[in-house]
Length: 207
Image (cartoon, rainbow, N blue to C red; front, side):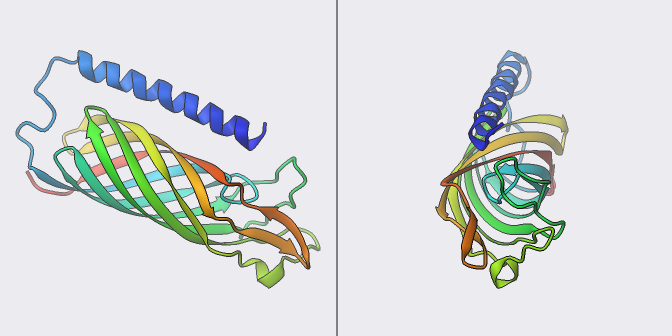
């Protein structure tokens, strides 16, 4: 399965989950969201993410974020670390266990019932380790990665201060890192990437 096929599949699954969550929220007969809650809310969240297109192979890792939410608008600062998973059938050299990328991400989101959409800017730097006798140029330190894009997702209230969230991000890669062995370029990041994640958010502002 190519990266394009994976991205299309992730988009379809995200839209299906979001539609189901929105339908469930609109059918629920209860007090409207936000009634009796503080106007400004602080949140801490943690997620597990799976990424395609940001490294030579698929990548997996944790993400933590701090969020300030006011009514239906929120702003977040997020940190992520991703590790390479296995090898790619396209002939890209197999990534070693130390191959990783660290990101910082800023996002601005709008919320409606159980659905949220965001715009974001992400920047980070990667290090690639190759298995076998191949030695990447500059010790595998890749150029900086810069991406911008959109996130869509759904959230489910598990408890008064705890929510389960799932999301999908589509990235336009503005600064595309590449991997060289000697003078030969073995890989360059694609112009688009996708990230899927699931996690929990905890409200830290007392009511």
